[in-house]
Image 1 (cartoon, rainbow, N blue to C red):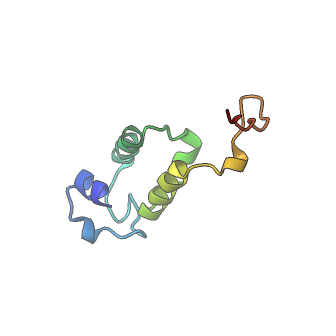
Image 2: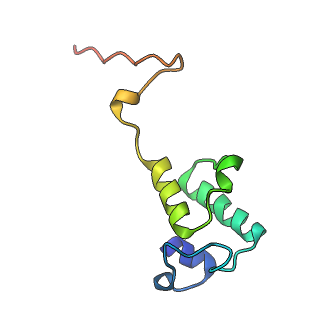
Length: 91
């Protein structure tokens, strides 16, 4: 929440996870898009347009970023074909 506090020029301790970006923090549509753009830049991923409408609260944004940064389990690692990648040979 420190980064969000910096962006909003507010004390991060005054920002709660249940704060609504628009209603509680006063972000209009353009400010919300700018915030999400900065998140994309900071974490080096893109937020698809269909995901934007789901990000309404601080908790939504935090959960979304954490979900995108969480590494996939090894069992889910696949190549472009969707097939399981072979284990590396020892030797």
